[in-house]
Length: 200
Image (tube, rainbow, N blue to C red; front, top):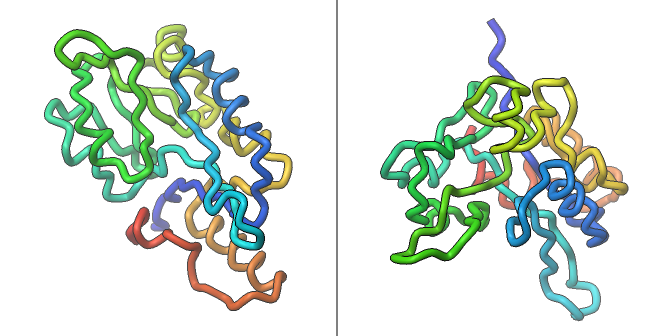
């Protein structure tokens, strides 16, 4: 019996051109409120010639998700395919997940009295939430469920340079490996930071 594919994201820093299509595509597809950005583009070493590069960052759907480990109300759950989702009806907006997440993925809609932040929002890898698949309620709370329709997440679909890879971790790793070999760089067995976010 074969093991189920583990869905993962990877952004190829040699291909990201900081166009923000992934960020805008995500916000538009899921009709996110102002101030919520499930996917961000960051530029490191900005202005330093030869060292500057950009990355598209969101929830990395970690195999051993720290957000799930610290949540006091167990609102997180990891699907069999590795996608990390959460239940907004259980979330109390405490912000523990934000402090635990190394990618800054959890987003909160408001700054309320006594630190109340409202139910957390984050990248769902376009896989919806715990409500009935493709129901009005699921779309309202979690956005599009493209995975259920057999489509790739919108961020990867709109990436013009194919910098944003998503899918089975083994296939994503193989694509990256082939790219590195074709560029003639020293070959790594896995993408940079892969081992820190994803455990086999």
